[in-house]
Length: 405
Image 1: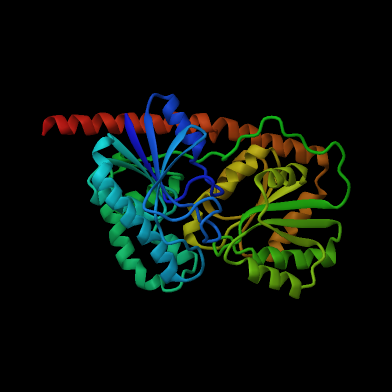
Image 2: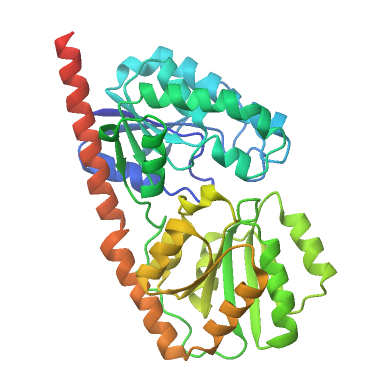
């Protein structure tokens, strides 16, 4: 079938789970896919070098056809600028679909933001909605200024998009249950777990490892992660366990505040490295003794599985996790993790010290257990098979409905 893949973000932007490899797998299955996306500006909110805003840009990335549409570039704490970012791409997508939607049999729509789904709904193209974040809950949980005023309109928008979607995919069982509780028919919703945006088969840790024990985090520095609790845990460990080093790689809206907090604590056992190239973060993960995962203490995160969960497990490393809900259940089931509640620096410090005290050979077995769990339950091939089944079933249903009319 001919598929329009609508997503506000796409490569070369970072942390794109459903990027080029996803599209090429759809094409290998016999489908013709065109990616419809914005000009790359995430996470700094600035258009990438080599791009400039214009009405439309067509390019090919590793054989994948990409159409880029204009948007207002922004990714900061301003609710006005973030809204303009979402709404500008929404307008561009609606206009493009009205002129081009009939060329496609189906759209695959990546949410967030929900405005991408709204564009497909208003353009009246059959579409499958991939729900990665539960709106408007996510907007409230991440502390976006003015979120309380947006909850009503965003909730109504979500309900409209859910009704118009031909099928809905969610990344967790908790999200599936939440959508059903909000009136979405159970027959419309399927769970497809995310995979790591790269899968690792030949990575080996350094042949020798010296002190200190090194714990590595890689990802976003945002309100959802609440990494200030990691800094407080590091302050506890600096006094009690000077043999432990914590390295944080990444960036985001809270980076400046986190640096100020770490400097105010005069920490020598924690370093913020900023955002680094992909190869460097993979090397940092490979050389770590364990990896760190932290989410804020919010009911929404009980049903959200951050994509770094799969990435960490695929790396074959043990994980110290401060999380609740489904992510914690998954990590415990993997056998790779020590899990404690979030937003509790003493508990996190204790978990890090406990991991550091585990003999290296046992930590390696924990990492291998996580990698095995990933291959059995969370791999790219397993998720693609389920995605393709949903797409094929949706297409047949759409065709049958058109035939009856």
